[in-house]
Length: 98
Image 1: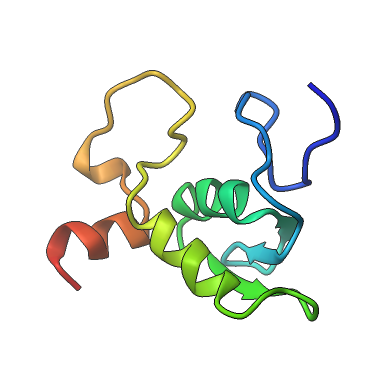
Image 2: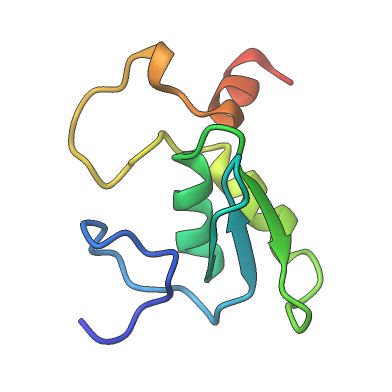
């Protein structure tokens, strides 16, 4: 499969899309750098997560990652139904129209 960014979950078999351009942090500031694709997938799976562009990221990388995460269910690489109580903060806001 080749090298993938640190934000790619080991069970998520999708390839990276583009270079590593964002840092995704959880509620206690643990984080991983990643491509926009895996950054969004990670962010959608976190409660209280945040995304920041790396210094050399193209303009808009963090907001694109944030917006993409809002369209994903948490742990989207797992083939299982998702209950509303399992949605991330981002998914909750998207569902509620915020």
